[in-house]
Amino acid sequence: MPQAYVTHTIIDYSGERSFTRHFLPTVTNANYAVVTGNTPATQNVGSLRVALGAVTDGNFVKHEVTSYSLRSAFPPPTDEEAQRELKLQLHCMDTAVKNFVIEIPCPILSTLAQSGTDEVDIAGIEMAALVAQLEANFVSPWGNTYTVQSARIVGRRL
Image 1 (cartoon, rainbow, N blue to C red):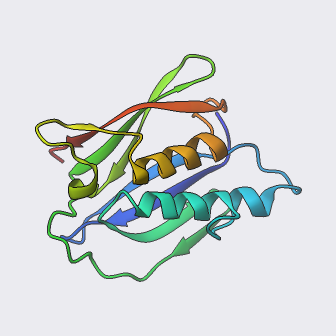
Image 2 (cartoon, one colour):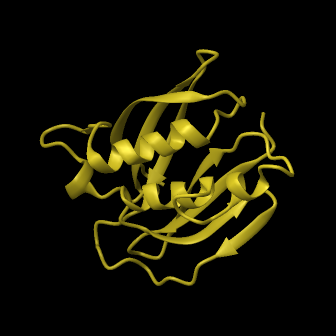
């Protein structure tokens, strides 16, 4: 299992917290800033944060890489549909043919949900940007590159 990962903590309309975790490639002195940095467009964690922001109605309150923690002081979102019990569930497969799931709280239903189904089109604008970020800059829990196979909206009773 890779040692490095990023955890994005998100709050919903009710002020409840949930998180999504993504494993990073091996961090070295040479790539530390690029892999763990929070700057959008040039650094992995920041670019992922922007891509996640396009698919969630929740507000980020914390971004944490295993080596540091950054908290954001945002109030709860104004959209009443931003609830942590709803998740954007990504079904992924790595190069060793191992399956795993990534869940992202508070999905933007009006953007992602397809009428009459829980399926999410991973070729849609926001989803394609998120998938591109994940597949280009992050690894599976076993340290392998991976592809996002499908996505759906799920609910949880927590």
